Image 1: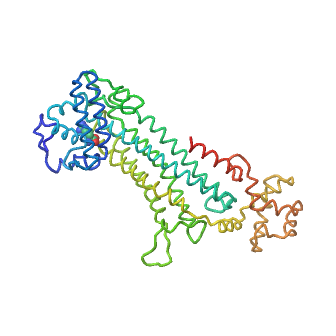
Image 2: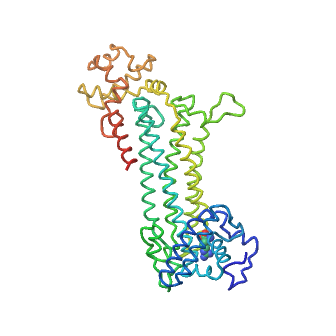
Image 3: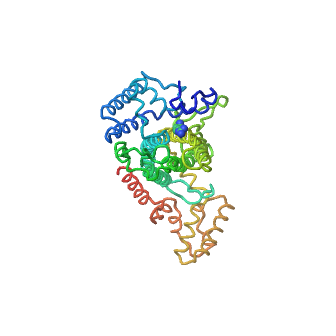
Length: 458
Ligand code: ARG
């Protein structure tokens, strides 16, 4: 295909160079945004008298025809085209003749590609936000279904204090609410229109940038033409938010992997989200959770790739910036795929409450409560802490747990201890006493659930 930009040069490019330069393989996914953007541009050119109203109508109808044909598969993207912008303009000119050549008035591919990308990515944000909502709702549903299930809470992956499984689920729901917030915040800055900045300096045509921005659903325009074409912060912010979001999914996956092991047996993943081994008949592997954890590295890599590509670029546009799309598209695809797996995987997870409770009964995770009990009897915390620790050591010597230690053994360590100690260190009461705001008692978890539901329904 002859280059639309042939003129200064013959437009004949070495075949390997042409292929190296082309972005059509990955930017053709923006064809809808490219065409819609061009339609708004044609309308603006017509409204401002830069082209005639009839020409504007012809361009818009021609663009609509290309869009319809692409959607219906009557037209396929030419893999030899330089990029999606050139492809659409080329087809338009083939179909309309000279009028087609007027579309690119008061515009450049530099502002055009920035426009397409902002429009494409804000659509991705909307889709991904909806998936995040769905995942937060599934976590909340699991919390409600397992509201009273007791499990050990961990620090250093050592059993620490008893908590409710529902409290653990809601911790992840809170992370996802923050992820949604970050995406909404990123979308605000993304949703400004760069079109009309042209190549870098603006234009001498009497254009109306705000009209195009309004038409295309933007909240306003980028205020500096150099910035409009040189900025890829919106991609970087998005991938930063994605990186944090993937880190959350990865931590959740890690717990699912641990919890579904024979060592823990806290949950069972549904069969259809696990795989077998080709050699070991007994295996039920959490491959999906492992892949989510693994793919997190990819998204971090996408962010690093673009940060690095951008760091040395002089203003304004440089071809290096074409590298933005593969990175940001891969990040979007990966996040969508991972959320798409996490939602049903979490939904189908079975919580093995007997096992989590049994695990909570060993490991002396009520030792803090025993110390608090002694504080209640008048001892300073540090002294109470020491006695509680000695009682744990006593239990380890005897091979029992604090709940089973006989009264005489307790009283040998402290005269302050009475029969009420057994109620004080009972796991349910340990959980129910954690009434501080945000704590693990049932009422607190219920109010967290109510809060998350309110945010999700807003
Ligand atoms: N395919 C190019 C990109 O993705 C479009 C912009 C080209 N601009 C230019 N001046 N060559 O970045």
